[in-house]
Length: 157
Image: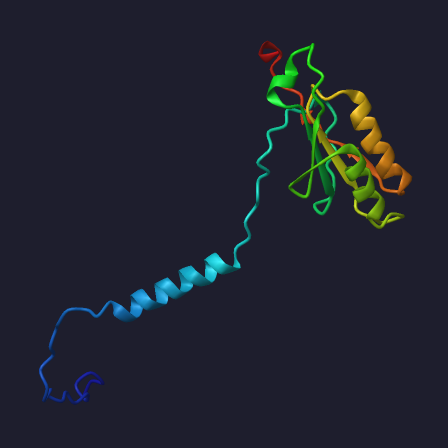
């Protein structure tokens, strides 16, 4: 006698019923997972100020928690005869030069402090960038000048 012959087959008393699948529970789980991943994801905020910094072959980056000061010239100030002052932005606020100097003086300085990154447009006078840099260095903060990488293709220049 074989082992397969010794298996007793029982007849079914209830017939199998096939009906439509209920998608409500699976849809609830999918939506909950979507909400969970959206709430736990991080968003990178891009600044709304367009800056065209000078190009440099050196690629050294600042730390992620750096203090960013953005300096741009107004659109009409690109003309050589204009006497318009540069616009200085710090923490999404437009500040004057004395205000930015006061704001940098309030920051905790010393070894291990956050670096100040100055993103200055190419057209910004060097004197304004130097004054912002001096205000940071007087408070014992390290300063990084923001640049963009050089173009690899010489025909693009």
